[in-house]
Each structure stands twice: as C-alpha cells, then as structure tokens.
Length: 334
Image (tube, one colour):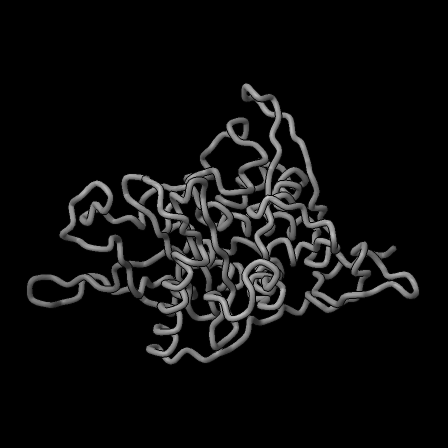
C-alpha cells in the first residue's frame, strides 16, 4: 500500500486455455465487472467523511424507492431475504455482515454525486466517469463496473491511511548493455491524499472486526488471518462474479472469481469462492515478506466514545451502551 509495487498478478487460471469461459491469454485483473458488495466501503467511507460513525444506527427494514424502470419502484433485499429488526443495526454490523438495505439507505443519505467523487479519489475511474443521472440507489450494491486492479488500489488506499499510490508494475528499465534508464524509487512513491487518515481508520476498524461479522459468516471464516486484517466480500446476481478484497497495514490483496464469458457459477459466493484464495495468498505473502502482525494505527483525532446501543445517541440511565471510535466532532451531544 505504501509503495504501490505490484508484488504478484495472476490474470487467468490457465494461460494456455483459450476457451471462452477461461480466455487464458486475457488479463482478467483489467476487466470491468460489477463488484457487488465489495463496493460498499466506498459508500460508507463517504458517509464517514460526512460525519457518520460506526455506532450509528441504520434501519434494516423494508424500504421502497421510486425507479425509472417499467416497475416504477425499487425494493432492495438482503442476501438472506430477511429484515434484521431484532437488534439495533449499527453501521459497524451492517458493513461487517454486508447487509444490503442499510447500504442503500446510506447511499440515499450521502448522494450519488458524492459517492462518485469518492470513487474518483480512490482511483475507480470507470465508476467516477459515470453520469449521476444514470445511477441510482443500487450503486451501493456494486452495480457500476470496476476492474480488480483499480478496486484493489482503492482498498490499498484504506490500508495506507488514506494516501493513494498508483500501482507500479515496472521497477527498472535497462538498455542493451544493462545500464539503468529508469529505476523506481519506493522511498518516494508520490502518493496523493485521497481521504483523511481518520476516515481510513474507521473503515479499517469496521472491516477488520472479526466478531461483528459472525452473524453472517460465523467464526473461523476465510476472512480471518493470524493477524489484524480488514476484508470485504462481494457477490453479483446469478453468481457471475465474486470478490474478496482486504489488507493489513503492509499488504493488500484482491481476488475475483468467475468465468470470462460471464456465465453463471454454481452457487459460488465471495466467502466460498474468492475468500479462501484471498486467505491463502495473504497468509503466504505476509510470511514470505516477514510482515509484522501490526494493527492499524489510530490517528490522534479519532477517540473512543460511548453511546446508546439502541439509538446510537447519548445513553439514558439504564440503557445498554456500546463504545466505539469517533472522529473528533462527530460524537453525539444528545
């Protein structure tokens, strides 16, 4: 994340397989595909910039939005087709368990133009170039296409405390006699501040919360490593694409699984398809490069605060309370 160096890239399962389903000689990391729920951190990062916090309550109930299609309305559904009203739905729980309805509610609050702006700052140029009028609430669920390389770079920005570094694939160029014509300097990666370190930390805190994701994924799932790690899955309709992206402070890995001809997979979702691949690559690379098992660094302007677990506001006497992280100035006052 800090230098932008691409340590490894695998664009197909078999270079010599030229079938339509595999297209082995095409680099799939550059293909534009719907990211599904792996796009949600872009939406929630926008909300964090606008004053939201992980302990804020976001309803998860039936919601109907007007739409321009023949049906005339849009009703988002969670993956499990249930509304989770039996407990207060915080932003932290909504992100960790990848619930769709809170994500769409968040999108409606922050607005499509602001999410496109965030996408552009994170390097998701294919999304940022879209006209806001061509998109709606479902953008929160990853309907706008991205490439795996670009989305991995966006997650690397979270890992790098909000500084985006362009992916670097060429470290050195030499002439015919071996004299260097160009050499990349990793000590000067020329990164650009995309989001605040505070927003990046909140995102990392939520995405690395093992316990919060137990509702949907259970313990000992592929997103858990032997060290603090942030991760998010994504699955598109009809199981055509599934994703897992995540990072530690020293390494970012993105995985897409699917068929090059866009045909359906057999009930493969992010946690079962791309997830185990992501887990194994993260574990191997972290060991191979001797990365320390460090946690994400908290900025000075992010501090712990306690709010009501029922409302996300200041707790009344006797109310259950929860302690979470707040950017200075966002702690509720009532």
